[in-house]
Image (cartoon, rainbow, N blue to C red; front, top):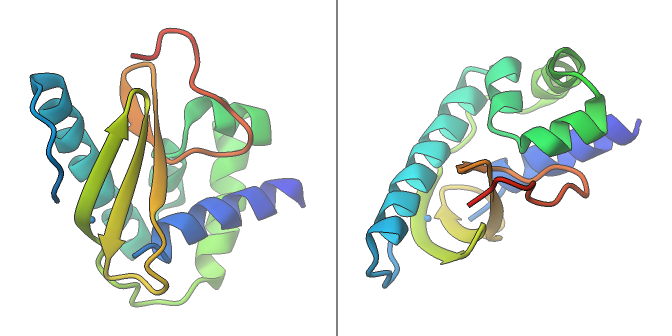
Length: 140
């Protein structure tokens, strides 16, 4: 039950969020913004296609391990939740990205509610946080 609730929270954060701006000047910041933009595009794809394996791939790996123990269990639980979800989810578009180290807040449009989405960087890659997992050693 905890796994289903955790996945539902991650799905809700990704699907019901309310985006591409910002004033970062470093090349690392520009790289992070590109990677976050690619992540949002991937979230749109996996949501549209109801791709449970793809959705588990955009979730923070340490959180997937903590919550499900295995990627296969994540896919199984997420597939059930995606099947129950409404079809025709809106396309999310980035309005603003705020990056602080290994954490980012992304304001999106296209979803209901307009809440910001938190992202975390783990082992050099951006993810949707899952569970109580913190960025792991080796993250940038």
